[in-house]
Length: 316
Image 1 (cartoon, rainbow, N blue to C red):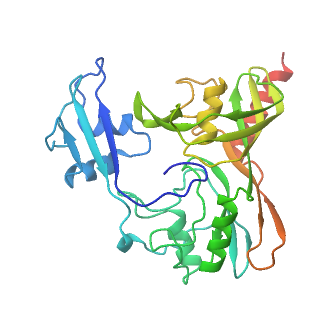
Image 2 (image 1 turned 180 degrees about the vertical axis):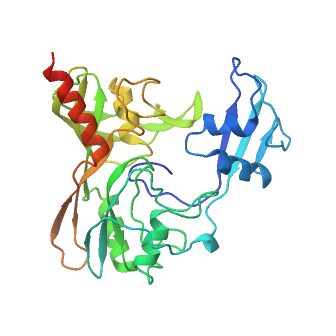
C-alpha cells in the first residue's frame, strides 16, 4: 500500500511493466528505476539479483537492454521481520504519552521497511525511541495509518495493543479526522466533494485511478487561497484509499503540483516532491476518551513555494 491512510495486508506485490514502443535500448535496471518512481536503481538491481524480475518470462541480467513491447514482471516480496533494526533517527514528536505518539513525518521518509529499503524508515526510528514497541505485527509495530514517502505531516502511532485497537476502530468507523493541504494547478470551485471509486488503473497497473469497479472513496475540499493559475486547498479524507487525494484531484482536473505520478510532466515551480502535507489530525484518546487535536505547519520547502507564488502574483 502506498495510500494516505489505508491499512494493508502484508503480501507480495506483483507488477507488470510493458516497454513502450518508443523506448530506446536502455539497460533494464535503469529503465525500471525510471518507470517505477518508488524504486531506486539499487533496489531494482537487488530484485533482479534475487530472481524477482522476469523479462519476457526469463530472468535477466541488470545490463539486459530492453526492447519495445517486452513484458517485465516484478514480484516485490513483503518486508522481512529480521530486517527490522532500531536506528536512532531524529523524529519530530508532536505529542507522546504511554498510549500514543503523534509524529510529524518529513517528506522523503518511508513509513515501514520494504525490500531494498530495510533501514532509515519511520519504523526503524520508532523502535529506537520506543524499544517495547512490538504490537500490530512484527513488520509494522504500532502503525495505524501511513503517508506516502514524499507526503509530509502527521501520523499517530499506537504504543500498545489496546491503543492500536481503539485507533484502528476509529479509523474504520471514520471518526478519526485528517486534514491535508495541497497546492493544485487550476482554480476549482470554493468547496466540493469528490465521490468516485478508486482501483488499479487498467492502462497502467502501477497507478491508481477512478474506475467503475473500484473501492468507494470520498474526498472533501475547500479553497484556501489562489495564486494565478495555482490554488491552495484544504482537503479532508472521508475514506483512505491508496493515493486517494492525488487520484481524486487529478480526476477533478486539478492535479497536485510536483506529483511525479499523477501531476503534469513539467512544472514551472521548483519542487522535488508533491505539494501535499497532513496538517491536522483529530482523534479520541484511547485511554481518556477525550477528543485531541494536533497540527503541523507547512514544512520549509512548501512554504518557499507559496512565497514564490505570492511574490509572483504581486508583480502582476
